[in-house]
Image 1 (tube, rainbow, N blue to C red):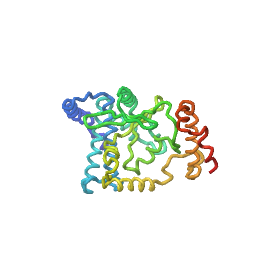
Image 2 (spheres, helix red, strand yellow):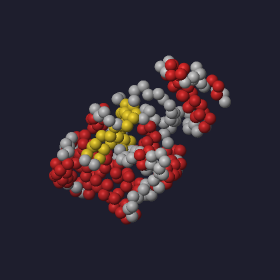
Image 3 (cartoon, helix red, strand yellow):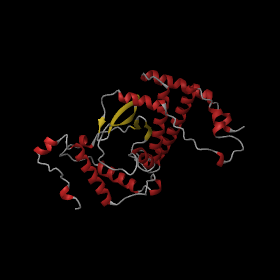
Image 4 (cartoon, helix red, strand yellow):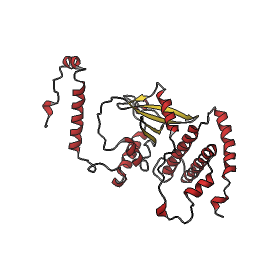
Amino acid sequence: MREAEAMDWQTLGIQLEARSRVYAHRFGIDRTPEWFAMKVAEEAGELMQQFLAATGQGRPRGKTPEQLQDSVDDEIIDVLCQVVLMAHNRGTDIQAVIERKWLRPNESDSDVEPDHDIAAGSADHAIYAQACSQPDGVAGFYNRNVRVATGPASAVNVRIPIPGADTMDHRQWPEPAILTAIAPFVTAAPRLYFESTQPKYQIHEFIDGQPLGRLAPRGHAVPGHVPTDVARLFSQLRAIPPSALPPTAGGLDDDPQRFAQQLWDATRQAYLDHRESFHRLYRQLRVPDDPFEALDGA
């Protein structure tokens, strides 16, 4: 008998279910199917954070190497238990699926198909709907960012594009592709949990904290750790091997002159798009009809 066959998954599921019910009652949590799915994603994110810290790729946050190794073990078990809980509440026969997916006899590695299923599905759309119903959020040029709680001490960031936003920067890759690519190397980047193309939105790890402008208003020194954190970020970005980056049509373009020309063209187009709407203001400010003409070809 294989060791996997000796595991009593049903009994473990019942034991974990009892603990989970007590936790949910204490904090007033409605344990919906979506909640179970997001708890798995949350614990997986915490596991990655502790793993990166334990391998010297993230901040130790005051923990010794031994404590970091214990934290990785703890997070592995948190992921495992949340997966068992989700399976228990779905009615999944864990042992049967292990046999079917992992332990089929007489099967060579070349016969095993990679699994590309996304586990979240309806859970993510429910979180998106909740984000759309919340009037608050932080908006930049392109997206509205809404914090959505997934538990008493956990949350995600739902990133929703702003309709009709002008394109003012040029990326060689879509944001979800680059977040996925840099995740193993950059500890300060939020993890991408889910991407939807219709409707368009993303679900990111929520990183709690204060904007630098609040921590250090104009005239105040930035906290001592900020320069070090910025240097670490650029050091980690510099260490990413080109082979880890997503492919681009025509290959990477790192020519600064061509990049500057792209920004120039985008700025001119934004001006032309809004010239009629702001015609009176431009006249009052004595903005020329084509303020870019004098610098063309410079």
